[in-house]
Length: 130
Image (cartoon, rainbow, N blue to C red; front, side, top):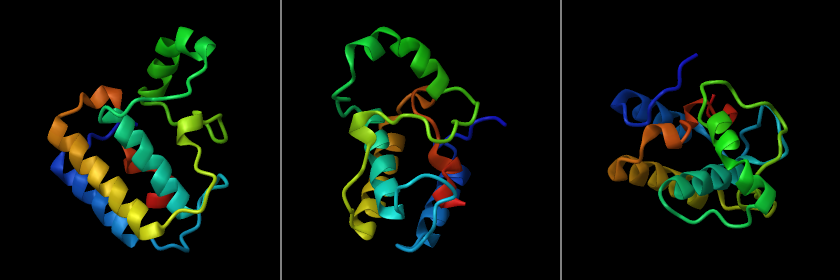
């Protein structure tokens, strides 16, 4: 499966439609986050892709960051239940509408900035968006 590009208008519209179908009661296929937390998680990842600093990365992880980045941006699907960077862990309850809007705004910013697509995985295949 090849990665979709958020810079393709059809893909972007597909993601927006899928986001619009979400409700606060949408159920995940796996994982522990509620839908509002997952939206906050995705928005934070998009914000970092847009230039927000990634804080709290342990030194040892920084040493092997190139290997991790290669895995993150590959076309291979993520394995379930792998460790999440501390900045992306959303353990507090989140407001559904504000986080959905934040994520959409972050995606629009990503497209406007012209971020290099290979640096940011496409969120089109997020289980909540199925």
